Amino acid sequence: RDLLGELVDLWEDGKLDTWTLVLVRHGRAVKRSVWNRPKERDKETDEATRPLTHDQGETRARALVPILAAYGVGRVLTSPWKRCVDTVAPYAAAAGLDLETADAFTEMAHAESPKGVRSVVKKVLRVREEPTALCTHRPVLPTIMEVVSQYAPGRLLRSVPDRDPWLKTGEILVVHMARRPRGKIRAVAIEKQRPVLSEGR
Image (cartoon, rainbow, N blue to C red):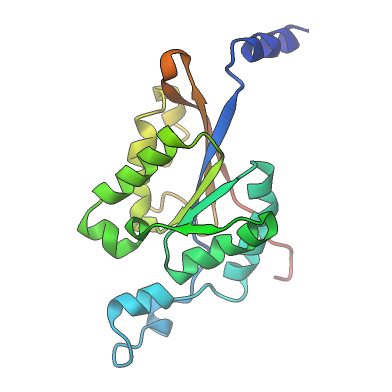
């Protein structure tokens, strides 16, 4: 009864009215040493076209579908590079959503100017109160985590990755956001999820 009473109090105070920011690291991709063909393509094209592996990469992308659905993701924003697009495309197709791409989320754009990533993430948090998934690359994750930390109290930051590799391939970080009195936005819970692959895959 006490726990139920606390839950009712939280609901009446509006503290359970939350939405999610889901950070997705793309699934396992074909190794650079296998895919890169310097004589045939330039470096950026190599990186932009490097696909997911047929086994773990594509399988985990499909396994993300029910997980993202469980969090009610209604918007998908991704790096335009193939391995990111292909990681969230199965969910977008299943949910009937259009994929939105953000050039700022590519490794190269981020290396040139992390400000673009910060700007996109802040806009998503401040403007869109709907569950949103952001799919990107390992080198971009620290900048996104930096933005998330600005909205999260210290106790929550203990559950936030604080070092490379931040997230494993195909893993997600779910940040539950809430709008407090006077319009202030805060992270109220953070969790990590990684779909389990069936044996033999």
